[in-house]
Amino acid sequence: MRRFSVQGRDYFALVVLSDHNDFDAMEVVEWVEGAPGGTLLEFRMDDTLARLSFIRPEIDITLLRAAVDIFREEFFEPRWASGAPCPPWEGGAL
Image (cartoon, rainbow, N blue to C red; front, side, top):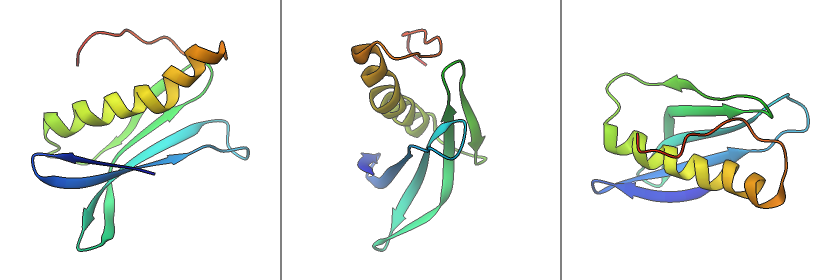
């Protein structure tokens, strides 16, 4: 779990590494009054594909950009460093 803020609002990136599914996932939720709210974004990744599998309507671009950066840091960078299989990633800005 990783906490971050965008435009004065608090969010958590919940990282799910699974032995039971064929993919790993990261959900982004807003933190409201000391508790997680509903899922705003969900990313999924396996050895060949990374995708945004869910996005709630009306998500601000600044939140999306911050979440993509965290997804890259939590999922891609460790795989690059270890030499593990990894789907393609174009490192340009969103």
